[in-house]
Length: 297
Picture 1 (cartoon, helix red, strand yellow):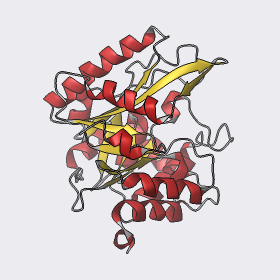
Picture 2 (spheres, helix red, strand yellow):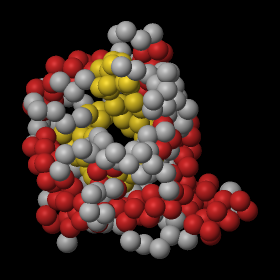
Picture 3 (tube, one colour):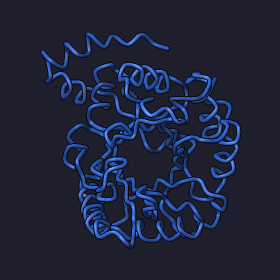
């Protein structure tokens, strides 16, 4: 693990905040168009929604030094193409020099806080298209949870459609992460049946006045071929909150990556907080699934 100088980072933020814009302007950018057409991205936007738990540890992602150390470790591994995060995380990584040569995706709607009574009101409280473009980032990601029984859903859909259009005007990727969701015993649950995921894909694909820059971020389900038959949009697979054994998880990713139209992985907690603590090994395994064994050399 790298040694992150958090005291220096805090001092820089307090005394030289313009350093963030300077770093952004001079950053060497990554590319969404990799030589093999595949992407391996690390997700780190969970804390801003109050989702700090990993494998039953409710505060696993709370320590920012630990999180940044794990992120820098992951981004330094061969074959890792970039990262998704909120402004606080991406700006820390910018100041640490960890975004050079990497794809950067800004997380846009973090208003639906985990466990809140308004959780399904996924308001846009993070990046917008203007700030994504100003920072020189590659796109914006939006969570779109669809509950036919919750009036907040229509606001989420409308806001997401406007964000898709705004990103397209800037020539930036709109990464849409849809779910059919519902409340059960006061808890929001996502329906991960193949039929539900297909329906969410159909709804998400039609958001906005153009889908030219729209990508999808979808969960891994049993019948990914049927899911991918529902869209022509480029798609990345998400890792979700890890629960089973890593070997089972990696095997399911490998099968899903073979489905037509799937272009890679966008995974966070499963790689940043593996059970054995070996972030580099977990990331290398995922890279091998996405880019092949040669990417780890």
